Image 1 (spheres, helix red, strand yellow):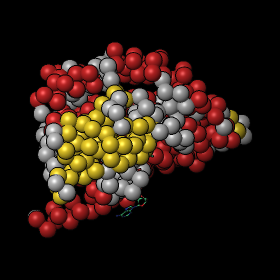
Image 2: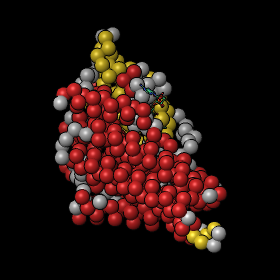
Image 3: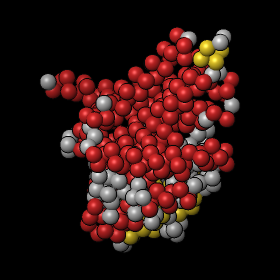
Image 4: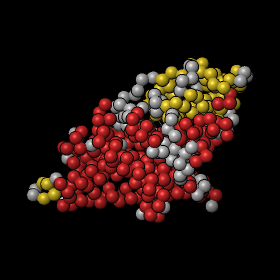
Length: 385
Ligand SMILES: Cc1cc2nc3c(=O)[nH]c(=O)nc-3n(C[C@H](O)[C@H](O)[C@H](O)COP(=O)(O)OP(=O)(O)OC[C@H]3O[C@@H](n4cnc5c(N)ncnc54)[C@H](O)[C@@H]3O)c2cc1C
């Protein structure tokens, strides 16, 4: 099936990421989950291999590859360790993309090469304590005073916050006491007035870095605004469309990782004198898993491919994210069932995949939000037909 979407170049990057994930990440994935320690050394190695700028244009220091290549890379990482996959995905498709999509030439030249090379990580600050699914309800304000914006408020659940060098964030733009709209800004993480809270203690993605960020009279130059006060939020929503393809890829990888472990175990574990895959209920579970993965992968690669044709993929990205994340939850649950009691303990890893899967139905738009997006799009298309 991959051949429908893959060129030789796609095969090459996938096999490079797969080798790295299997040789360097897999041996320590369990320990990273246990300790929750951010694997800076592995992230640095990923940077050296060019994995932190895969879809970024070459002129800004990236690999200049397409969304299919990027999705294939996220899948390979997530098959082994979803924490490393989300670290890379939040950096690339969330932290870096607002600048690539809507930044000025100066902003692109100033920030993107360091992001694409992995010299610094990027983070994406949209969610607030009172603005999650309803992200436009942002309470953070950016008031124009002279040639600076003074930013006050906070962002919550920000991936890479404690490790990043640059934050893209949204804020209500205020000028002369008037609210102009939700704008997008760039803030180096060492900006005075930016405070980073301790790491969240999470169910899964335990080796990724998730924190709240506070802005207390944080001053950024006016030139750090991305676009204008009326386009910032749109840039973030556009960024999220691409982000959803990478979350869907992360879900496919998580599902595939759990499935491969279950498949292997089913050939080794014996009960009633035969390997358990020979029992139809186990064999059928494996058949359902393989089918679900194939379907989810097709949705991911189709959305990625269509985006690479320059087409609008709001609906396709939402469908891929919705379906793949729910498939990941189902498959990781069933993988534990195939392992029986051994699936419930840490030794065999499938419980890690199960814990890592849940957030896929929440982050970058919950399943409910994806259904809202899809229903809006299909009705709109039907009415316009
Ligand atoms: C580990 C992790 C990492 C994250 N990383 C980032 C990051 O890097 N940057 C960032 O900006 N955000 C990040 N997020 C935030 C994430 O995107 C939000 O948690 C998500 O969008 C949901 O928002 P919320 O948590 O406020 O839930 P809420 O919006 O409060 O939703 C609660 C429930 O209500 C439902 N709901 C809400 N509105 C509706 C509606 N209109 N119709 C039907 N149901 C509805 C939701 O589907 C959900 O079930 C991260 C979250 C997690 C857990």
